[in-house]
Image (cartoon, rainbow, N blue to C red; front, side):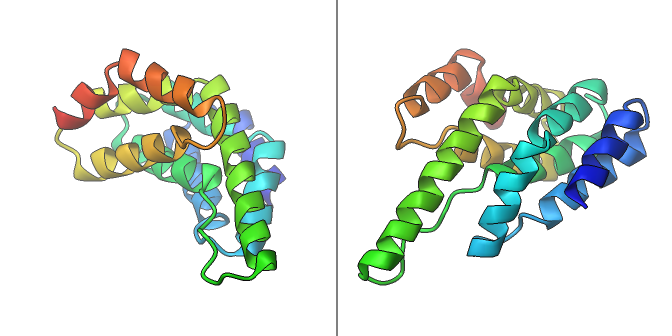
Length: 168
């Protein structure tokens, strides 16, 4: 299913409806923090979902639905594994592994110019609550710390004016 969504987005880059629904579908497969969705997030990244979402956002910069869904989906595909609820070494190990996978997806998103796309969305739609909320969430997930590149992603967001864009 992930491959089909990404393929449809690539096949119809000028169709805003396809892009908005594609982003929505990519969000849907990665919406919770449980283990199966962590696998779905990893698979989504592998098949090019992050790049497809960024391309959609760039191609349809003034389409509110594409921007809102794109930011929402970026946040969820990058994800951020929850901290383990228990003290067991297995739970802590799974939590740490999930977190490191999220860091890798955050780096891939940044390399795909997702930070630039989200900041552009925030600037283009300052009065659209959904874009603002989802854009801030996407930046938070992409700028996740815990890996060596996290600080650089945060710095890139600051340099692009993310704080100003988010506070309007």
